[in-house]
Image 1 (cartoon, rainbow, N blue to C red):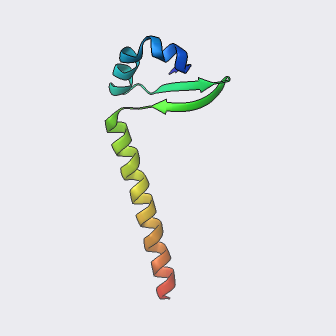
Image 2 (spheres, rainbow, N blue to C red):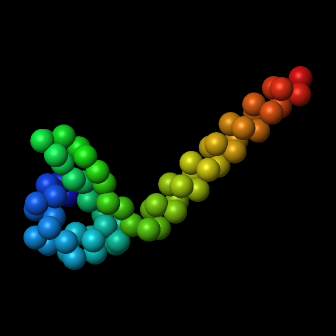
Length: 68
């Protein structure tokens, strides 16, 4: 896990983007607090698909309850 400030990231942005693209999340901190994460496009697609499936599943169960 790589944690760095935006100022640190600016110095080596290409290397950081490549690491994220290869599947190694890059964590950014601000005032020693987690602030943002850079992930690969593939990881993003997986997360958004999982989130979408969770929302659809929740909506389906709500609709079934309404039919009763």
